[in-house]
Amino acid sequence: MSRVVAFLLLLFIAPLVRAETLQVALYDTDYPPYHFADSGHKGLVDELLIRFAEKYNHDIQYMLVPEVRSQHLLDEGKVDVRLESEQWYRGNKQYYWSDSIAVVEDILVMPSGCHIPAIDELGGYVLMARFGYTYPQFEALFAAGKLHREDFYSEIDMLKALVDMQQNQRVAVIAKNTLQWYASKNNAFKKFTVSDYSVGKASMQLQFAYNEKGKRISEQFNEFMKNLKSSGEFAKIESNYQ
Image 1 (spheres, rainbow, N blue to C red):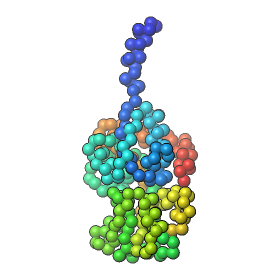
Image 2: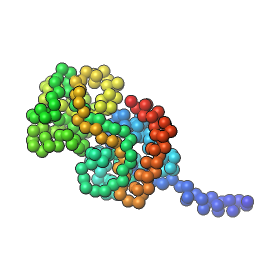
Image 3: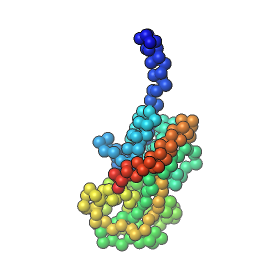
Image 4: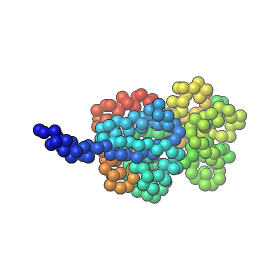
């Protein structure tokens, strides 16, 4: 084969193997063990996206933005996918969804020595919550004015506020795995009182734009996750973040 013919073949093949750009919106704050805004660390979601991009030849471009902003970007067509759960989503738009990546269990947290009452006894308390998040268990209490909400931009901010708290009428709602991860790094976070009941469980998923690209990529990701789980590789990856 002449050099000219070989060069022409390369020109023809190159566009067929060119990586497809995938715009991904993730939180601009840490959400361990699932995501870290610091590029020097990887969370479960971060690692899965890296592996997925390698397998399907995608060029991932990340946009790290606040939770609410990421939803707007998806709706405006400026990103292809974000992190969410069908159970958490309260809008009326259509999307394509990935299969479950992990099950997130929320619990209540207070300073050491405090008593955490039942949900229906939280009248007059302040719920420390993450900005932009929906909490189905508490929405009726918020609407009735029985429970007040104080928003924070990250779980670490909530935990630091709990450590310094002098009164016990504020209670934080935090993912159990997130609290466990922070407690493994800081002994001060091992002293909290934790509810013996869950205040919500939801599957963490990827939320894709409702268009042809979103449909195709979501199907690819679900195939990727199915193969990863059936091979046992997903369990090995997940164990690194527990």
